[in-house]
Length: 70
Image (cartoon, rainbow, N blue to C red):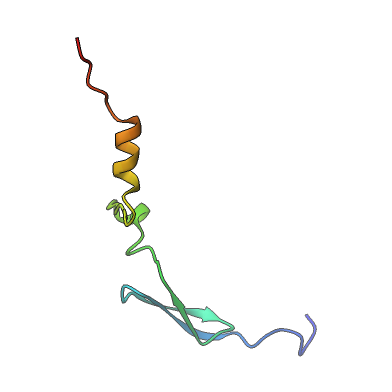
């Protein structure tokens, strides 16, 4: 390998918005992320439906079960 062309690879701390901290090595000393494996719905099995504009209700009104009248 050539000398002097590689970046400085040092210890790094990755901090998630949920508070999870991971110690690793990187070229940046500190990295902040929004979602990690402790709070991501795929890994936790908890799904949150964010419905701020009523999209789910509107979908159910349009395409939900229709009552059959005789």
